[in-house]
Image (cartoon, rainbow, N blue to C red; front, side):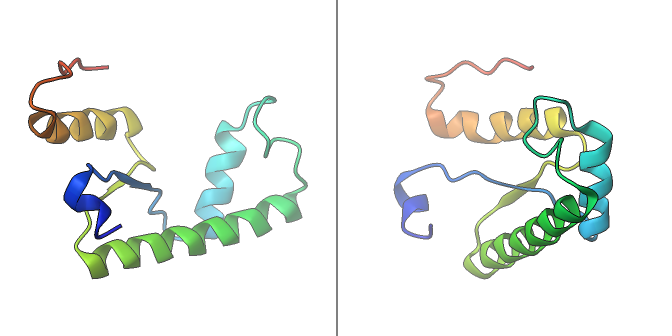
Length: 101
């Protein structure tokens, strides 16, 4: 990733929640029948959430270690996407006009 950011705009999205139970509660709250996690048992979902939590913490740690900016999309996702668009727009030399979603 460090070499990629010299030639590309690197956007790292994470969900920086406090623990696996927050992931579990978030998925239970927002899961819809078309989501692949919807029909998991509580045990399977919690196991997935533990892995997801650990994976996100690893990504955040790697980003910090390598000076790579990451964006937390756990809360106010649309606002965060608008922030990302504003930040990368100058790097795109206005090739893509910014439009707030």
